[in-house]
Image 1 (cartoon, rainbow, N blue to C red):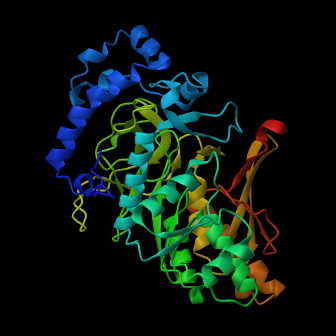
Image 2 (image 1 turned 180 degrees about the vertical axis):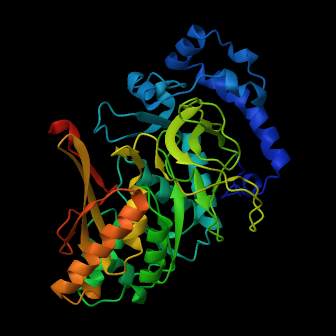
Image 3 (image 1 turned 90 degrees about the vertical axis):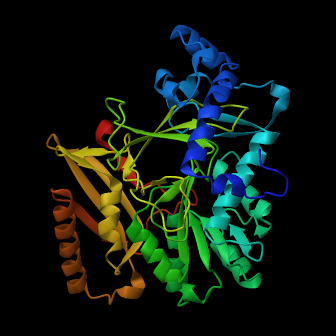
Length: 437
């Protein structure tokens, strides 16, 4: 743990490469022994003939088993808990919309560590105690809201827990209290901007200087569009409830990949099929191991998120390795007409069109035994002259660009602004109807 005066963990933030390696080498045996105190890992290690005392350092990492979301669901509710229940002070869960939720428990020391990581991340992006920060994320069992909130308060910022939704109230608070920093999903930030433009208001007149966006995948094109709409910097943040929540990796002011905090997580990037490490710089599945969470440490967790390491040194001077913006999840990849497609590829095309809004929905159906992809996307009313001939031409342009990007034709429906559902949490971008037809 950091000392009381080191609010943002600067001794961890500015570690050298040798110090990071030595720290991980020291921490891995400790965390494996801690995990073995849980019923789940005690059984798994015994079944696989793993003696925690044999794990001496990083060179033994590959001897440890992977952990999956299915394992977390099977061990629900508390099979992975490695401390007495009396030491648990908070729990977060996933939504559980696709089955049993995953439940993650934290001790008081775990929360202090998480707060420090978040404060460190936000300070790196340029936030200070002089900022007024508005958290427009969901609170409760979702880890994103409280995780960001803890970091904001740890850093000493005036923090407004506005939560998600109620756009009119959120805008009132931003104006009345001169809010300079916000946290929200990128889709919600896009919705707020479009709602303002519809009313003839300019988002650039808000006092905002910085925003943290995460909780859902989004493209570099969407980030640039948000930065232009609000005239502010938008920082990408990677979080995962299984590993804590937000703050696993965060962008520095150079915005060239996210620094993954290697004092708290061992990072591997593996081929999602063979589970072997990929060469540096190649895309693979991110695998993470807790190093500082003692209440419920997780070993070699398969995140399903696809990324690659950013090569070279970061101009900011931090040597925690950087991961690139995610191309998608291995389990979110769509196979349409024999072609592998990620929703982010479609979003890239949409965000390059100023006459389109930020809200869209992909629907997959089956026609004559072939998959068909349809895209509903809202028009940007402030950038559209209302001429039907213009609309037809732009529809044809969008269909041509999507065919060039994806390699097959897409049915495009350009709809009125505000006609598609707005998500206050993670945006639902894909509806797959193939199994129900």
